[in-house]
Picture 1: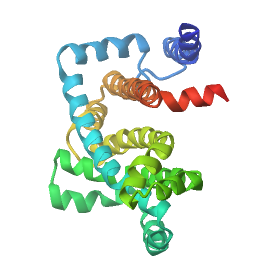
Picture 2: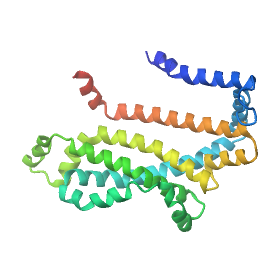
Picture 3: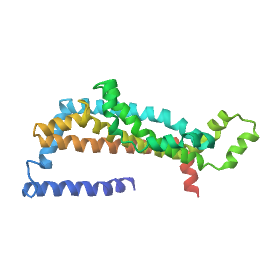
Picture 4: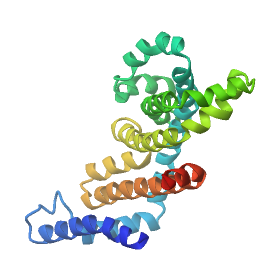
Length: 255
């Protein structure tokens, strides 16, 4: 069943790439703008073999992971507080709603002044973008907890911190895990965008350099590689989530 699902998932992208190759060979698609897949793949393999692709990937993932981790470290505790303490939520709701719509790209000039061209620059912008989905999903997950579950903690004489750790956090974990997975995809998107726009490092900078050098096949190779890396990471996160939350999925399947 798993193999069948994988094959079904690959059907559309394989058909799309085959159609791309056919149209490019027929010159329906300009070869100056849309390189043939048969040229893009060797260009990507060459970049992989000479180490350039892996080095650029490490730079992008380093910034994305750091920004995502910072957002998680801030967003999960804050989301727990917003979900459990209504006065605290009323105090910060206006601030959250005012900051949340601010485009992460608007921070590029500020962080460029602070950090210059560096890993920290991309990570800072990614952290800002990732914070909001983690915060909102965590808050929503906590508010969805059965109130009687927390009452059990009170009846046992647990303090507030212990109730959060023993009851609120485990009950909210499935929702938090989804928020973390969504946020990591955002981290990659934002990091690559910052690299294209302002930071001369990583996969985004490699793409824009290839485009300026009129090497369309290399540019597309990097683009497809970004998609592949994102897909692999998402699959890994889903499997990790399934293993870590076996109790949750067992309960779901039993319903």
